[in-house]
Length: 185
Image (cartoon, rainbow, N blue to C red; front, side, top):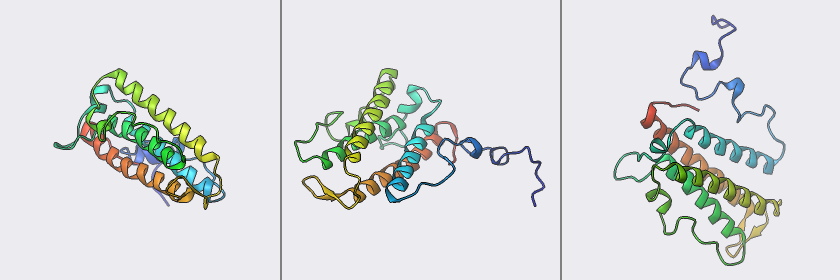
């Protein structure tokens, strides 16, 4: 039995939590049925987590580098994940690969600058690339199906996407803490 007043939420008791658990947009209540729906649910949750880690920051804060010589920043992560979504789509297709979004390798991080136009473009790139990759994967609902020139299984691709977002959400948590001390879920 708790001695805390009923009006207190978990976020009141644990003020460092990112969102009140009762209002967390990642919690839809009932867990999904089936393997594909579960994988999609985890991916959606990590995508939302990345956005939440970037909320309320200006262009300078989003572009701030973590610890030199690292070029990692929250803006760089947004750009990197847009680039990675495009790469995954290249794995699915059997045709010629789409060109890099930001030119050369590592330009997603190295080119992240404290400019609002770049921030807006990065979010637009991420949304567009996520939607395009989601649409390409929707054509292959069988998780065991192998696609692309490398014959990668859709299941492996989905798990790899989740792993990529999860790893970078951990980076985002540390980067955000360096900016304003905010940590949590």
